[in-house]
Amino acid sequence: MRVPFVAANWKMYKTVHEAVAFAKQLKNAAKDIVDVEIVLAPPFLAVHAVADAVRASGIAVAGQDLYWEREGAFTGAVSAPMLREAGAELVIIGHSERRRLFGETDETVSRKVHAAFAADLTPIVCVGETLEARDRGETLSVLDQQLTRDLDGLSSEQVGLLVVAYEPVWAIGTGRNATPEQAAEAHQHIRQRLRAWFGADAADQCHVIYGGSVKPDNTADLMSQPDVDGALVGGASLDVTGFLTIVKTTHRVAASKRT
Ligand code: PGA
Image 1 (spheres, rainbow, N blue to C red):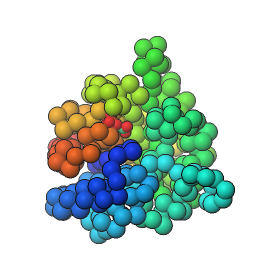
Image 2 (cartoon, protein in one colour):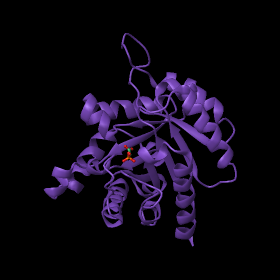
Image 3 (cartoon, rainbow, N blue to C red):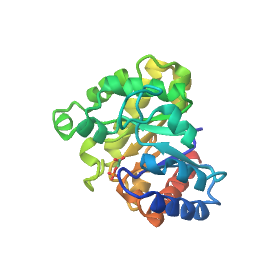
């Protein structure tokens, strides 16, 4: 059974000081919550300090991106081994903001996914359709195309370990979340594809989480869908109380799905 998974993607918010304050507060408030994987993805600068702050708490830290080379003359880039050494255990790859604003392609996503595994980082691979693609009825074919390319060359074992985040581009930061039915359709489709390509074990182990305007008041509806294993939360993760509500709701809904 997959443990529910809730990750905070802080994007370019929070200084080191603010990030550590949040992490300490969350660590304290979440100390009795078990059976849910909680992840904080701060800006690079704060990865090390946040990892220190949440040590021995069960809360893990993720980078928001990486570069696939180990080291070299790549000004501004951060490598997978650097993130790992700083205390990150996971890394977000292929977020739609990276694709749209920074030229990320499925080919670079794939290279980054391999680099993450080589450094013992768990990739959180983001996929999702634009509004135009949805309106043209191409949602599922876009997902197929992204997944085939992004997961190219991975073993079934690796796919079992990774996290796929379904994030419809039109729902990110817009306050417009996918309906539970739209999320369910996409998640079921992703799971079926993983099963067909990588086998039943990999598909059963892989977390498929939803992202795009997840808020405390829509969490229960989204998380109650069969193949939704958790959430990648942007805006609503910036506030400890709101994020904690999302974590607790996900935990409660996951427990009721098991019974
Ligand atoms: P949002 O962002 O929750 O602010 O829509 C989600 C994400 O970008 O991962």
